[in-house]
Image (cartoon, rainbow, N blue to C red; front, side, top):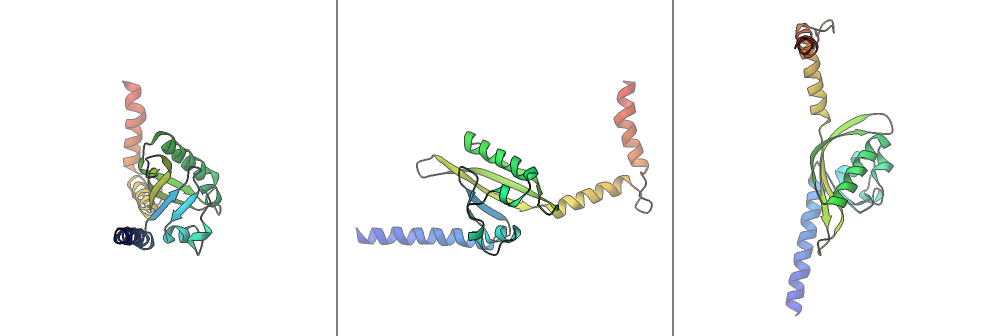
Length: 171
């Protein structure tokens, strides 16, 4: 009947609006890809990170069009495994290498994307930039093992090295 149809149309419009609000306002990269790992839907923040002004400029592209093969191939392989097995990938830390040589890091969750009948038709993912925390962790590790003034190895590095190499040799 007409009233039921109006409710259904209204409900779908509300659902679409909610998704659009999530995509537009999340600082994280949100995306849907098809069976060939081509972008179908993505957040504006992701398009901007890729260097595009409009989301539409990214649609149909793959990671091979954005990143170097060093990152694109493992990401593609992971996505194809998800599509083949239906097993999600949760919080994987990925090294992203860009054509200009710079490197970023992301924590990515990717899950199978199903159609209404339950068939896998692609993947859905959320990736968060963790570059700053990776850089900070590396700096902390460096400060723990090297003198900040001279840059020379410190006592802690010597003791750790001894534990790693000499103690097992004596056992």
